[in-house]
Length: 149
Image (cartoon, rainbow, N blue to C red; front, side, top):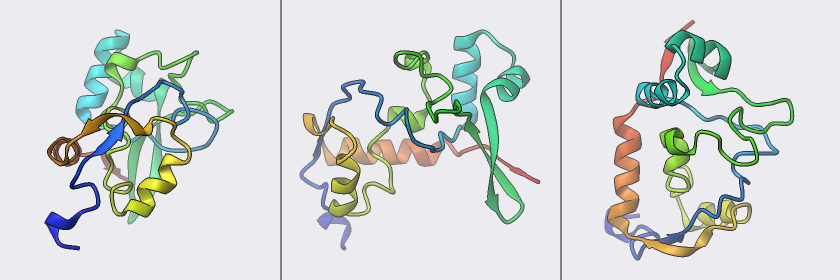
């Protein structure tokens, strides 16, 4: 597909209704950048190392590397879900830019598949192609924390 022919060129509608469907009930990863950790540490008024030990886990990615992710509760809810997001104003970039992730924007089929579990997708605010691509650029500019194991 040529760059000007992407399915989201006319824009996509999305409005978060805070249903928490993306934060609860099934396992997943919320990968963190240094900027995410800094915002959360400041918001929670906790030290960097205490934050990592209390709220994070390292996820093996192959090749002798791991990525930093938020923990989940035993029922798969996000560690910060308490009748809603308890860190909403400081939530990670991954959460702030949903559903405008490269993996969801690969095709209209991928968008439709994801929208089946998110009642805010396809409704509400129209995001322009430039706004969507701004989310993608922001994600690329804030790399996920990775360590060698």
